[in-house]
Length: 82
Image 1 (cartoon, rainbow, N blue to C red):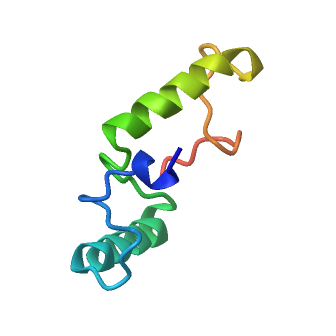
Image 2 (spheres, rainbow, N blue to C red; image 1 turned 90 degrees about the horizontal axis):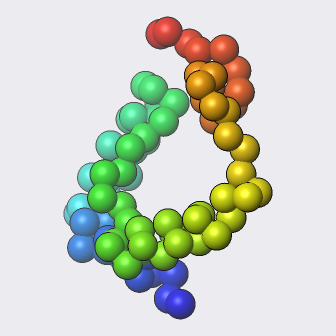
């Protein structure tokens, strides 16, 4: 599998350093990370990429941790309302 096929490269030309869309996206992501500590890349995965990753995740469900009804975040720390 070509890893590049997982990414919607028309929307996110990550392999083209001089592309204006890449430059603006990197700037936005840096600002989001600085402000919020996270960044969202809507539509980052291609259709094939999403299908591939979902299939792989489904095959590994038995190895996953499920929190049930408890609220948690990626760091398993208390929520920060700020």
